[in-house]
Image (cartoon, rainbow, N blue to C red; front, side, top):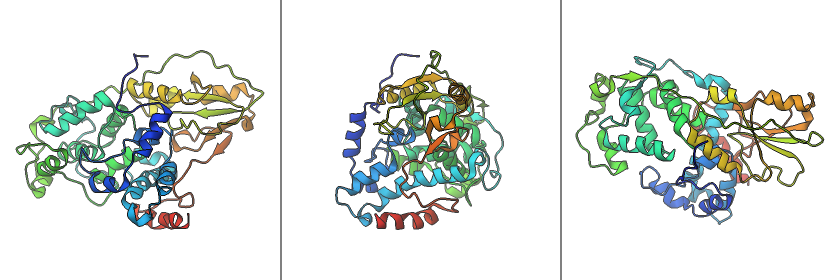
Length: 373
C-alpha cells in the first residue's frame, strides 16, 4: 500500500467523537449549502459505519434541543437513512435507471474535461481537484457536477456516478447513485439545472462568464459545449492490500467488518474474532481508489484485535465447516450474500421501513418515532 495520506478527516476515534461534539445544528441549517458553511464533515464516518446517524441524533438531543429547533439538521441525517431504505428495498435496481430511462442522454462515457478538472467552470474545476487530493466534495458541488455532466454534457449517469464514488472517502452507493438519478431525471419528475450565478453564489466564485451563464430555459435546450464533447471511460480499478492466510480461533464466533461497517463499539465486550473482510468481488462491483482503501484501513485500527483479510466470505465460511451461527455481521444491502447471525444497523427510525415515493413521505412517518423518543 502507499504511504499514509493526511486528510481533513482524522481517523482516530477520539478525534471523530470530538467532531460530533463540535456540531452546531442551528448554524448548520442556516449555512450548509455554502461551500464554507458550517457543515459537520462527518459523512466519511457515517458512510463507513464508524458512527451512525442515530448516534449523532442522540448526542444532539441530549444537549436539550427540541426537534422543531433543529429539524433541518435531523432531516439531513434522515436523507441518508431514506437512501438506505430505498437500497434495502430495491437492491441492485438502484444500479440502473430506477423510475424511467434518463431523458435525452447521448452517451455512456465521462467528459475528459471533468476528469482533468478543465471544464472552465472555475469552482467545479477547483473542487474536482480537491476531490482527488482529499477524497471529499461538498454536497452542493456534487449536485452541480451531476447537472453539468448529465444534463449539459448528456452523459448517462451511471459511469460518472461510479467515478465519483471511486474517489470519495464518504462513498455511499445509495446516496451517491440515487442523487445522480434525482439530478438527471431517471428517478425524479424533472432534471435539475444549475447556472453560473448559483454556482458563484454558493461557492464564493467571482466567475460570471461561462457556458452556464444563461437562463435555465436556454440551458435545457443548448447543444453540448465544445469543452465537454471529448469523452472517455476512466479506469476504475481497486488495488487491495495483500494479506496473510486467514487464521482465527474457530472455537469462538467471528464478527465480520467491511468497508461499510467499521464500528469500534459493535459487540465490543464479547470474546470474538474480529475480521475486516476485503472481498475482491465487492470492489469489482463497487470500485474505490487507493486513498479510500487506505482510509478504511486506518479507521479499522480503532477496532481492537482486528484482522485484515483480502478474500471472499465463503473462505471464512469454510473455516467453520458451514456452522452459520458462528459468523456475525451487520445487515447491509451491499453484503446480502453474508450468512450467519445478522445484527440490525442503528437506525434513526427503525420502524420506518419499506419503499417510499419521496423523502417527505418517509420523513412524515419517521418524525413520529422521534417525537416518541
